[in-house]
Length: 426
Length: 119
View (cartoon, rainbow over the protein chains, first blue to last red):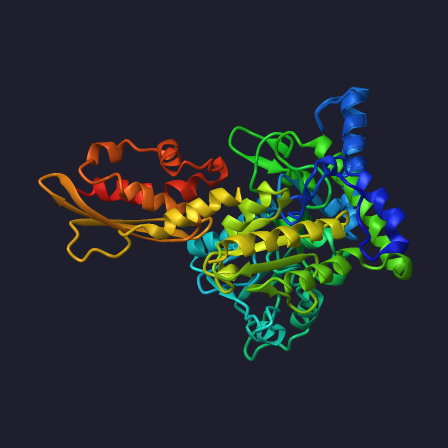
């Protein structure tokens, strides 16, 4: 790969070059701009998992020998670090295999609380992972699923969303950041407003919806504190945060930890069992039936720690570190708009992600050709059909940035797009 | 790669069988939800033989080109059409279509085979 070109971030270049070499996956000669799907893995995560593998391993919560104790300690430490990443206690952090699994677990666990006529409210920016579990339990229980309104600039209509709340609203599920547009949702403003709404006339229960936040995209881009968000549950995954695939974290309120019915039952989550009954363990273990993915948990924790360090640098030393991902995002948007017939979606306040289209050309064809030329972007509906069909008939192209992307990646995308459009535009 | 796409575009655009058939014996539509491709095929069948075919394909260039090259090969060839698969369609196109685009490639074929299965 040729040396990286100046991207206008001179003061950060040394640190930036250091970041790139910390990602072995970037040694491939490609411009990797599909980070909203999966990021490259950070060296610290690789090292942490490698050390665990080489050091001898055991299962968790089964063995009584010292090695088992060491594994338990490493798993607990990983849980604590991942929980700390979003300002939570480890007693609230459940490891799942994915964000999708976590959201399904929450939906499953809540379904028996729902009555016909109750309502589930979703944002208009949801990934299928935060739509389909709710639709399924709604169908089973005779519950109504409603969608919050979106403004013309592709941001949430916060007032409209709050106005949809009433005493029948049992669950609110919303993403913190759109995986299609990068739109950041005002979760804290929403929860604060909902929690302080006056009681509806004649209601004894008031507004007490369970608020679930999908932070799959946000975790890599925005510092998160679950207490500040006011959410009851928050789910985010490792592989979009520079960590290994196959593991995610589901942070639950103490109330949900105690009361949510587990979806997966089996080994490791039972406190006592008789011929015809069983009592689940208390706490997070109740939700982790089966042998846990210890090494990925360790890698996840290492990656989370690395992100925290980066966020700390950017937030505590903004003059030196700025916000490199979104400086680059602005440049990408400007450069894309220089290409004829390109439509760029740029909601106010969006971060990390740029969706765009080229008039008269199918996104999959363009993404295929870009891929052949060493530029990795996503095309299609991004598992968010209800949102994407408002943007385009055939989906969009999506370039999604990570902390290691630079101006050379943007240049590779834009210059190849110009060639493709010039040659093939009908 | 660009040259291959130019060839596909030419294939997709040149077919003369792209109008809905008013007197069709049977029709079927197949969709590829992942990228929004949709292909409708109309067949006119007389004495168990396909005597005319037309299609309407919306979506990516691979699905549209695929539709164009398949319909040219189905008249009088019910059994051969039933036996077609993605690799054969790939050979019709003469382009190295990625396995990642398999559903784009085969959506028109699915529409055709669905239509035949209704006969």
